[in-house]
Image (cartoon, rainbow, N blue to C red; front, side):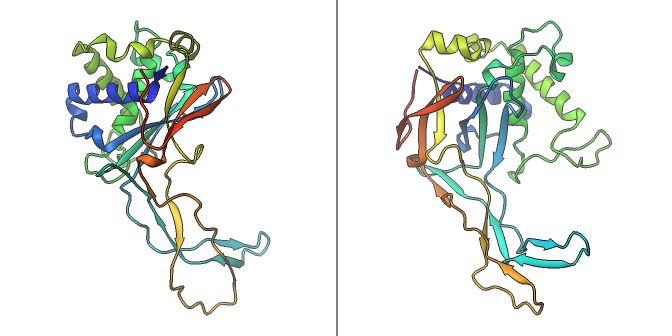
Length: 271
């Protein structure tokens, strides 16, 4: 079987070694994993997740009456934390997830990306997505890269027209560096072709699939004194681990309409 997440991780390492603007990235601090996503369905092809966001300031949720606007109840005070992901002795800084099989079936046709790649083959849309997620990694290790508009003012969203243009520049720079075609050969095939050619498509996931490491709320051990008469709602405790290791990784085979677990505990590598 083809381990799709391993192939993407190797491609990322090659991109980082050839594109100066991304050379600051330590790929050993990045874990590539897979999530299920049907082809043709709405949703992201891939997502970058930061593991280096600091613990938030204390706060609470509250509810208001729709008619009067009066606050009726609140949650316990809490902080929001980021779980740790540690492989061996290495604490990771980022996770990048890819939706399978959706990502495999992505093409330039009909996408906003086609304007940046005139005359290129459809599979370049997938290379664009790979570089796109790498570009989200912040040079200061401060989370997700802050996006600026053309006038230098921070944008209020994760993307801007300049962001997409920079990604395309990096893709062109990578291809112009004449990398070994074997690095991206797998991107040229859709999911059905890969599944038939290799006898299956597998990828790294987390044991608590479909969940994965995400920021979680933790109630303060000592709750501030509240002089109001608001009803306090107990905060739902996080069900995910606070710390993940290689024993929390699994290999799953991805199918057109679902997936199934193959191995767990430690990382298994397919061809």
